[in-house]
Image (tube, rainbow, N blue to C red):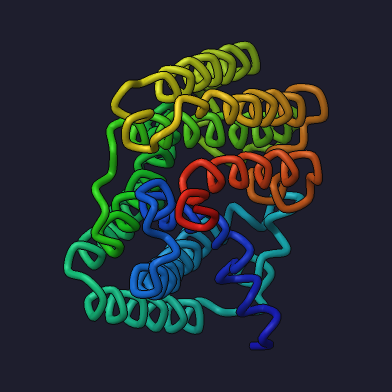
Length: 294
């Protein structure tokens, strides 16, 4: 059991999704308080350990099917590089370590971490086979990340953040299913839920969710409660990055067919990375400039 196979199994590159834990503290203008940053960083690693346990569980369940997939057949359990007993041991270690750290940090963080694992148990064994329910659970997973971040940083999660996180997760989930559907149409059958999708439905659904997300973000930008809390009426400038980022993601999905793995798309696409950094930088200026420069 080589270290490279263990890393491939626990998928640390997917921990980028768990950066959602930092969002409540970031928007609450508290991210750079030393105690909050430390708590959130530890919470990130605790949740990441639980998330990696989920990946191991998913590979254990899907191993027989993954062996017929052009890409997933290379995964450690599907390829036989890690056997079932070793996989279970790694799962238990990750789950025990993650929940122990979460329990030490914050009771609510432990609750959200366990909820995330339980939801994914149902997802892995049955619910991922039901169209629309499958991507809805992906959305719930991202919401649990945000709630976990709010709990560990002791920051309230706003209604805007809940809505926008869920919409973004739906877009990512639909893009992933679209990529899988394209592989499916080449004569391979890997995911039962794809029987409830087709390209027109996936494309229309992505456009609808993207449109609603942009409108919701603009409403957030012009909301009196938000502009008062942040102390600026120029939040709408950040919408530029949101709109361009969503358009780029739709382009990757519908034109270049590169989003079977949303995480891979983000990590490899320089355009998306620049847009994301621009959005973070512009919001950081609005949220923190008074503290840093005045």
